[in-house]
Amino acid sequence: MLVAVPAVLSPEQLSEVRRLVQAGGWEDGKATAGQQSELAKRNLQLPSSDPNAQAAGEIILTALGANGLFMSAALPHRVFPPLFNRYDADAGHGFDNHVDNAIRYLPDRSDRIRTDLSATLFLADPDDYDGGELIVEDTYGEHAVKLPAGDMVLYPSTSLHRVEPVTHGSRVASFFWIQSMVRDDGQRALLLDMDASIRTLAGQLGDKDPSVVALTGTYHNLLRRWADA
Image (cartoon, rainbow, N blue to C red; front, side, top):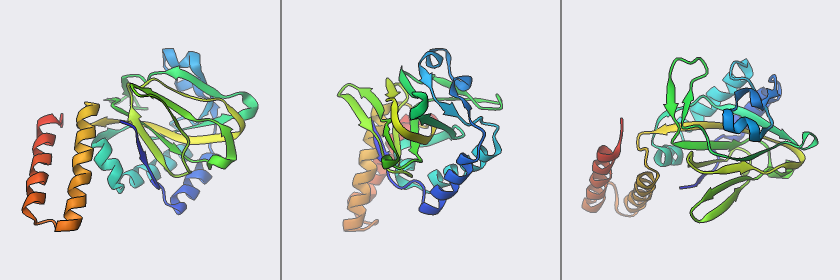
C-alpha cells in the first residue's frame, strides 16, 4: 500500500524545518547506511545528533500526531526519529535499488523498532530540482513519487525502492520508519479503506446511525484481532 499524505507540514512548520535543516552540519550519507545500502547510497545526511536535525524532527513528529490520514494509514506504534537527507546534482547524488533494514536501532542504541512502513517527507519544491523521483516497486510495477514540499509518502518497508539521480538543483527530504500496530500491509490497507468508509457514512448519516455504529464496531474488532499492541 502506497499512500500520499498531503500537507503534513503547515507553511509555517515547513519554513522552520527548512531553516533548521539548511543550517545543519551535513555529512556523507554512507555514515548511516546498512551493509547493502552503503554500496548504493550517494547523498548527504544530517547526523542524528545534530541539534538542528533534532529540533526539525520534533516539529515533524508533532505534525504527524495531528494528521488523521497518517494515523489511519500507519496505525503507528512507534516512529523512528526523523532523519534528513540531501541529493545534489553537482555531486551526482542518487540511491540505487535497495530494501530498508528490517530492524532499526534508535540513535542512542537504547532500543530498536521493526520497520513496517517507510516514509519520505518532501522539503524541497518539485520545481527546485530535476530528477530525484522516489521509485517504489510492488506487484503492480514501478511508481514514481515526487510530491510538493510538505507532503509525504508512506510505503511498505519491504518494497524495493530507489531515488533517481538528481540532475539539477538539490532534493531535500526527511525520511523515517514506522512500526505499526498492524504489521501486515494488506490488513492495514483494509482498515484504512474501512475507516474512510466510516467517515463518509458518518458525514452523511451521523455518528449515531446504527449502520455507522455497527461498522465502527467491526473496525475495532478487526483492529483488536490484528494489532500487536
